[in-house]
Image 1 (cartoon, rainbow, N blue to C red):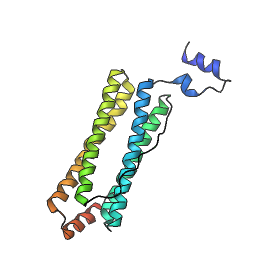
Image 2 (spheres, rainbow, N blue to C red):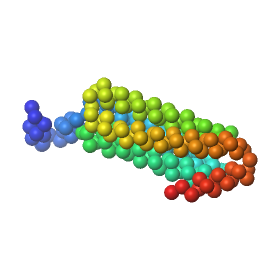
Image 3 (cartoon, rainbow, N blue to C red):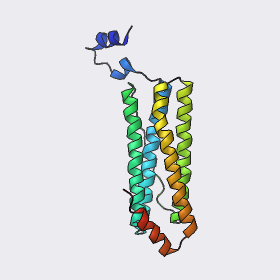
Image 4 (cartoon, rainbow, N blue to C red):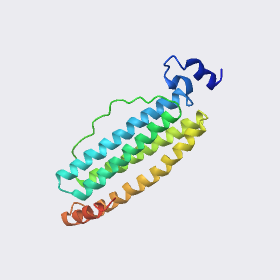
Amino acid sequence: MSHYERIKQNKNNNIDRTEVMQMISKTMEEALNKQVNREFYSAYLYLAMSAYFESLTMKGFAKWMRIQAKEERMHAEKFYDYILARGGKVTLGAIEAPKAKWASPGKVFEEVYAHEQKVTGMINALVELSIKEKDHASFEMLQWFVKEQVEEEEHASAILSQVSCIGDVPGHLFYLDHHLGKRE
């Protein structure tokens, strides 16, 4: 039965549209839904880091993290929209609470860099799955995230290097705080 015939047959039955026009495998749908959750967790993590920096009155670091959290929410929504566009069903799960305290700004950025490397691994696994599933549309969509992760790791690494060089010297940290506060 063609896609059109299924819609026509079921138009009066209040059938969930994902049952009629799903253009994505269940395996890929589940993996992408899991990534939606992971991206929202990343947003929570960066928001927690922003709150930590606010508690230290490091407004520039806090602003940088808050913008990073916003980017992660946008990533989650990009996956969300893609699942729907492919006729899939979005399933939102519970988001794990991130920790709220770190030993120093340097430790925060060590975690940021490690986290971005972990996310890169997750994106790469999704790319591999799209290849295995012969899902060319998902493969193409994921290329944006592959490029984005190169940028995310580069930024995290650069800031970690700067924080590592200056250590916990207050004047130097406040200079970097001022610099990071200029992020738009």
